[in-house]
Image 1: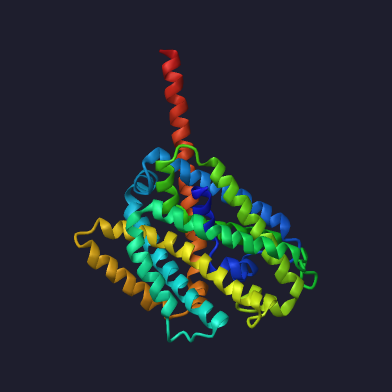
Image 2: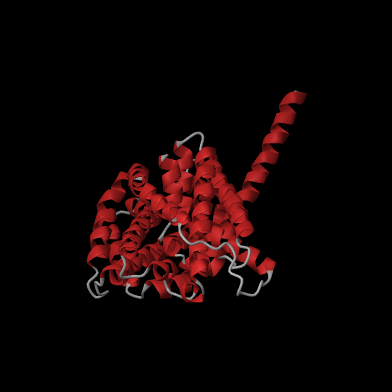
Length: 337
């Protein structure tokens, strides 16, 4: 259950719960088959990272085994991506406080408090992240599940059909982005746990069901919700009780994603000569970058993360195939001997 909660928590952030990133990546006409495709890719990606982590001894071992001499460059890309994602989540907390409770962004009370908690709790490693996700993810799933009983629409008919190939590319980019950001913690969890296939399957199905429910609610409300910065909040109404509940649930999703994105930064800082100073500097950098705002960070970083995720997964898949061929050759030699 903790493994499943961690996987869901890495994906279910502010962009997911609000529907903002889902509207951007998924087509509005006949989107359900594309959700099935995303679920399959997510299950494949999580399972692949679990296998690589178990085979190569965690995230660092996977980097060295898969990318070899390019491992340092890939490590830098992952760390920068994690830092920008953490900054985006802090900016998301400020946006939630503004949209849901009227607290101006110049008073980043919640984001600073959460950042302090991340600083201290991250020293507990994957165990703390697992328990945090196990506490918060059920509330997120319960909220999304409750939306299935409202006004839903599985096909927004007023949008042109579009190109199916470009839609598939967007889906691959979306999955690649999320799996790429989860790679450090998923690989390390794979090294510590023997059987992770069930967790990968359960998390992928739960995420897919959440995508269908959120998009169905947004499409039922029409163009005004689809074009909003936070589409699901536009559906519920910012001043309503449902809007307040949505704001709280969005904060839960942001916190789970923030812990996952902060994990590789913390692990790298602990390997430095002055880990405390590096961790404080990373916190300061994330907070400063968050001042650019969630929308600007998402627009600039997410497309790059999608491409990087596809490359990362392809490299891991290729290394796994080569390892499989080598294992079969060794088995044949032993049989002949």
